[in-house]
Length: 196
Image (cartoon, rainbow, N blue to C red; front, side):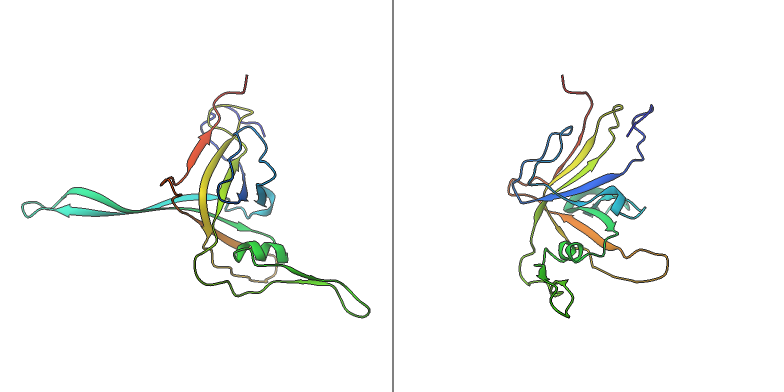
């Protein structure tokens, strides 16, 4: 996808990949390795696109002798990756519901074949995975890419299915990014030069 000057103004699509925790992130100019599973292609998401959003909580300190805050302490920080997948397959529902097992029943004499998942998600700790948001443009020039790398995240999106005329069924994903064991939340990597 061509990018023209001014390169820093981007309006391109992105793809979403997931992998097991600890999987190495690909180089910004390389195709993701086999462990990276394409979760959502840009042509499968609605036009709202992919949103990377930061939330924080800051506790302000006020003094007796003034009305303005004197200092702030950050006590919480969260990152979210939000998008809506337009895919009503059982496999897509499985991914939205913490990778529930898909059961396939073969067609038989007088009976149709079908796929099934359980709708109840298991309790306890949520399943986490590595998350990669691959952008097909770079803010530094044409023919380059950028990517967001999150070592640990889980989907907290509430699946809502609505069948209506003229509007595709969409599965809402809201990946909450967690700190990994080294306290790293993630990275934004933008290619600024072609490999030599």
